[in-house]
Amino acid sequence: MRVQGAWGPSGQAISDGLFLLGFCVSLRIWAAVGESSPALISPSLSAWPSPVVPLGQTVTLRCHFHSPFKIFRLFKRDGTSLPELQGHHVNTFTLGPVTREHAGSYTCSGFYWSVSVWSTHSDPLQIVVTGVFTKPSISAHPGPLVQEGKNVTIRCHSPLSLDKFILHQEDSTGHFQRRGERFTGGNASADFFIGSVISGSAGSYRCYGSLSRSPYEWSAPSDPVDVVITGLSKKPSLSAQGGPVVRSGENVTLLCSSESAFDQFHLLREGENLGRPLTGGRGPRGALQAEFPLGPGTPAHSGVYSCLGSFTRSPYSWSDPSDPLLLSVTGEEPPPGPAFLLLFSR
Image 1 (tube, rainbow, N blue to C red):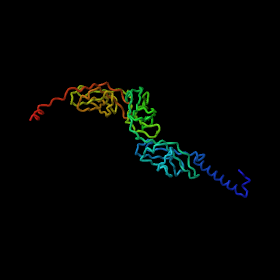
Image 2 (cartoon, rainbow, N blue to C red):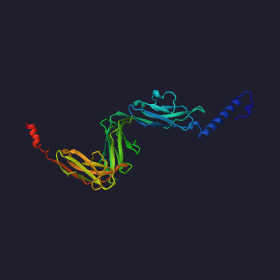
Image 3 (cartoon, rainbow, N blue to C red):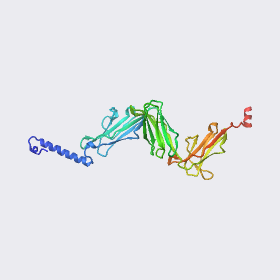
Image 4 (tube, rainbow, N blue to C red):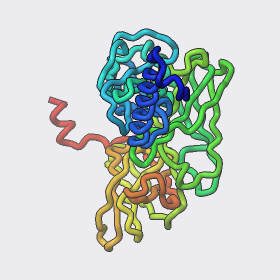
């Protein structure tokens, strides 16, 4: 500090003193909000309902900060100019209906009125636009029903020459979270080795395809595949009402029964989940029982069936399968009776 200049005729020291006074006031303001400098103030950016947005839908970006910011700016980091990013806003920005041009990485900053300074930028938030390409297919190998501790691999496949696949797993809140990604060099499929199946890896999976040159533009999501752990409870029993040998045209009903208090039962044919879980009721002997009506029997109903039980609170943890039941639909439909023949002989 130049003390001598404080009394000089130039008045320079007076302006220096005003600068120092303003600097000290600014320091006190920054200290009051718990920051050492406005340059260190960083808001955070979030997306609702999700940063993964289907084509044509809308997404709301919100800039969060515990300070008296009144205006905010949103930036798209690839330099693309979007009309909704122009000018200053309150802390919410609605994008949409989204197009491929909305895909990318975004940041935001806020204006600090007390010292007329813009904050540093938030950490980047990636907005992914889905539906740019047709959906891939998904499958689990050796199958979606896996004994506890056994390995499973999920395969994503697309007829397009996509060079990246992304696998998402549904979390406990029902949202799909990214599980991993694979670069394939343009091959049509990618394998995701899940490994030994435990409760955390059981669940519903979807996959997306993309191109590495446009990482925020994805395909539509695949149909889901459910990876289920079996063998966590005692097996139920399976029987056919009226017996396992049925004449063609007769109604077929399979009964799954258990002494365990399962609140859902699942029917499999040749190891494939038929996808019709039923709630059990009490059978004639007090056991829990679910009836699976298959309708009039046809040769297509013949095969090996089994059933499993589960609890709705753990939808991807099932019992051991029942002993297999061989159902056989044989013969032709019974010939028409005399009254039927008489009617059409007239």
